Every structure is written in C-alpha cells, then in structure tokens.
Image (cartoon, rainbow, N blue to C red; front, side):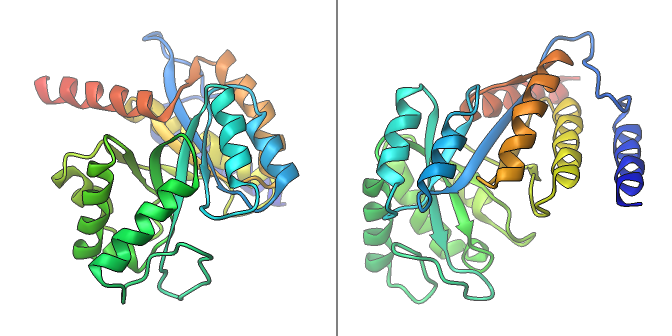
Length: 260
C-alpha cells in the first residue's frame, strides 16, 4: 500500500511540473542539480562513504567534531566543495554541540564563535545552517553572521530553511553574499521509497527553476539511493554540479525571465 501511495504522489508531482513520470530531459540541454550532504563529522565510516559518492557533491561539516578535519581534507582532495554546517539555536532548543550560535550571545561572543567554527574546518567555501529554526528568524543575528562571512572573503550561504519564517537569505542578499536556499530535504523519512520520491521532486523543481539544491544526510538509505539515482538522473538529462554553479545558473535563468 505504501508503495502505491508513493507512486501516485510521484505521478502528481511530475504531472504538476509538466514532466513525464520518468522525468525525461528537455531538448534544451542538461538541467543542473546540486546536492549537499550535511551533518558530517561525528561518524568516520559513513562520512567517508558519503565523500566517496561519485560526482561533485558538496559536504557540509559540523565544527569541532572528531572527524571533521579529516573529512574536509578528503573532500577537498577530490576537488569537492567543503562547507561549514553551522549550528544555530532551534525553536525547541535542541543540543547543538560545540560552536553553536545562541540568541542570548553578545555580538562579540557571536562573532568569536563564528570565527572559531570556520577555522575548525579547512577548505570551507560556504556555509549552511544546522537547525536554526529560532536563530534564522532574527535579522540582527543574521546580520552579524553575514558581516563575518563577508569579511572572510566570499563565503557563500545556503539557507537550509528549517523554518518558513527564516530571514537568513534575505539578510545575506542585503550584505551582497552569494546565497540560495535548499529546495528539497531528501531524507526526512529514512526509507528508500521516500528518498527516491524526494529526489524526483528535486529533479522536477530543477527543471522548472533552472536548477535545484537538495540536502541529504549520511544515512545508509540515503547514500544507497543516491548512488543509483545520480546515474539515472544523468541518463535523463540532469547534471550534478557544484553548488556555486547552481547559483550561477539560477541567476542566468532569473535574468532571462525578467527580460521576457
């Protein structure tokens, strides 16, 4: 029954987007997708398995974790993007680990924590938030963060969108930070059918918007599905590219839509 429900939902997504259920490529060339694997750093084996996935995935690593630096070095050695998975306070005040950003911090404490978190992970070129359903709603604190990212010389910011009330991307734009937000979480449900369904949603969104960004985690189910789905997506005209390339492509599409 669950399989039937997922197949029906997949058909609805594809019908809405104008895609056949196979998500075939258009005649306009390859459609770009970007993938971030985050929550890395605490587990060695699953982290290495994630880093060894084929293609230019991005890896977002929690600061001050046992295997964070090692995984960053491995990813960088494979010419893959390394990001900081920056812990931020949630509405439910979930444990963040070392280096977390809290609403009650002074500006000095906040900036010191951001500096330490960035320094903890080598080769960082971008940041996305870990949790943060409370903090990403705060314009003042997001301003402090974007000011630090600007000082660090061009780090981009991806809003994980853990709340619909987030202002993080808006504040990043005000600071002229290269920015975007994730389009799909792949694995809220850790079962293969649900993950495949979310991956197909990502492809549909990417075709509609000129690119799409998905976020997943180093769960065995996610890694297994991605190995297969990335091959299938390529055969159907979708291309996995670095996150920076996705942001560039979306800007081109947006400019073209404004001119039409």
